[in-house]
Image (cartoon, rainbow, N blue to C red; front, top):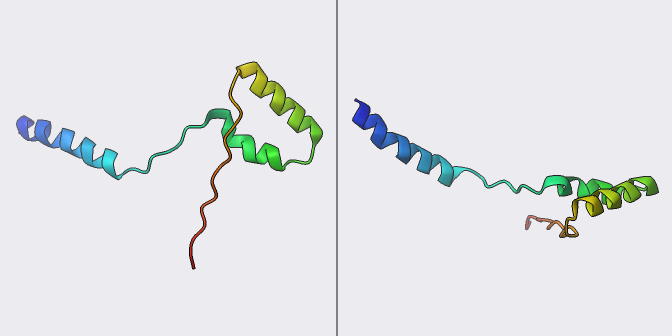
Length: 69
C-alpha cells in the first residue's frame, strides 16, 4: 500500500499546484492604494520615509479589472 501512496502523493501535489490561484506577494505595496487615497499629508510623509528607508522602487499602478456587460 505504501507504493500506491508514493505514486499518488506527487500527482496530488501537482494537481493542487495547477489548480490554485497564484497570489501576488507585494509586501508593503499592498497598502499603496490606501495611502494614495488618504487625504492626510502626514500619512504621505510617513509612506515616503518608509519607502526610502527600505530602498524600494516606486510602486507600479495596480490594474483595474472590469467586467464586460
